[in-house]
Length: 433
Image (cartoon, rainbow, N blue to C red; front, side, top):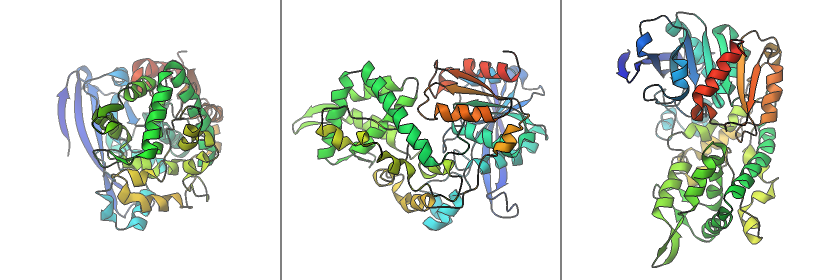
């Protein structure tokens, strides 16, 4: 069943599809996928090529645009666009603390979630492509984790693609999760140093907040237990173009005077709970490290283990001296499943995923080395979320891939400078630059 309606400058059509939960068992259980078709109003009756957009994450549904802003406006000049809610997100059979108990206990939930990685997402795309395009190949635009999916697409089903456009999402082809985080912590430390250089007053502010959290039990209005480690994870903001400014504005109103002394303000707590809660995207926490799983080695809470190799991130040790508190970001830790009420019921499920050892390889270096699909990738200099060295090594592996390496944008460049980014990538795949 479809529903078509209009917004300023665009015609939208809601589309739903049924696909196997396990594509290796096509006669088995099925799930529903949702996608929103978008076409420019003045081109609604034209036969246009298709572009399918794969959102970053994992765990986020596709953008809910109003009209044709950012990169979408550029794409609509020549494409019909399919904004796909990847399985488990948005309207595509959402997976969360409310729905997962339908599967059974933690073991059954973990087995179910093992089907929510890039390989299944790409097979979903191939399953629905004939119904969308009539069988013609399409262009994929992958942002961040969506780029990981695009590289798997090139590895497994390049015949389904006319081109691949990747923004901030070239994964390492062979790194274990431990390698990813060993590269990540020094990168995050550089981002924190840059933040403090811009806003030196935040050094003392962050120390004061962390000290308060080490000596007080603080529960946010939504039930989130705010610890010093949880506060440090607000450093995830520093990977975005405006993130350093957003973090500064957050810290500057942290405390308020009360009859009982200084307390964390309601305004601060309200902002923090919105930033830290995984209620809207629990798959990010559940399968984040599984995105890097590739062999019989379990991920085993990789980010938490590797963090121990970087003692400068320990809040108590930082406060015992006179150094700055270091923020973290782009990492998932087991304590998050104790702090966040949206994740608490899923702690055992997450533990089982962390011990899993039957992950399939996601990328085929030999096939990528023989690639014939036009590919262009925006690689952001010192990207906090995706290691630049890993990305460039992968770029050299994929035959014919053309990169645009820039420090004009951070990881969210496709949002902040979407039209310019997409313009550049399309020019590269069309061999115009």
